[in-house]
Length: 284
Image 1 (cartoon, helix red, strand yellow):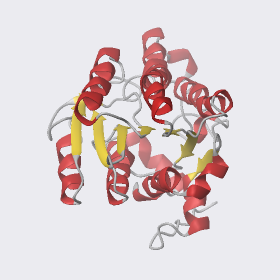
Image 2: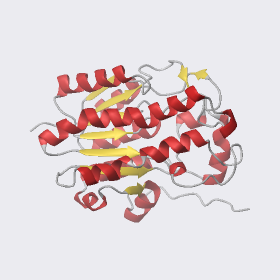
Image 3: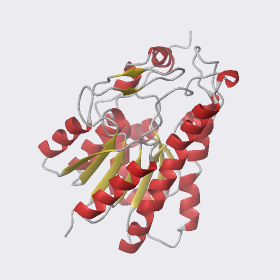
């Protein structure tokens, strides 16, 4: 029997890396994709303006950790602003491993426009945000879904954001976020429910997973994230990662098909990470 194969974007660090390891522990072989193949590479990590920097983490490091757990890893460089790189990654996966059982759309656009006020958003920035947060994810689904339908099984987990559901509690710099980012995530959040309706007669499952505020290497490299940590507390990447693994492997998850699962609440409800307890935030 073939091993199950997971394909994860944004897997060089943070939630994506933790999810890759959680799935490896559940018996998946994992295709890990991101921009950073090797440690020390420099990429765009700005939020309001361009900022090239190196952030700890790489696909190579993630792949080594997966293989240390006894599973196969396939690291492939992928840029969400480059559809050719997306096609190449899917093609290589199918050529080498034959199938994709689980798609985790975790990666997002990193660059100018994420934390820009309305009057400062550039047209190219907002186009990049929608390409990197909506259109490329849709393209990945369009590439993977036919193979899942042909096999008669499969699961797609879209990592969404509460910023696409609610108004910010304050402006940028005081706990808020940019319109362009939240608008792109609001569009993205509609995908899973529509897929559930369109493929209601199939055995496939589609989920939104909202991780809550999670402290990752990328966020640690951004000065504007300190305010969020103070306001929202946060969870380690292992919390949403464990929830993704639960959605992909537990029969009970089928009852949540097409829904948005809030990872931190779900984790506490099912005691999925017993050693984690959320830090109570001050309301002063």
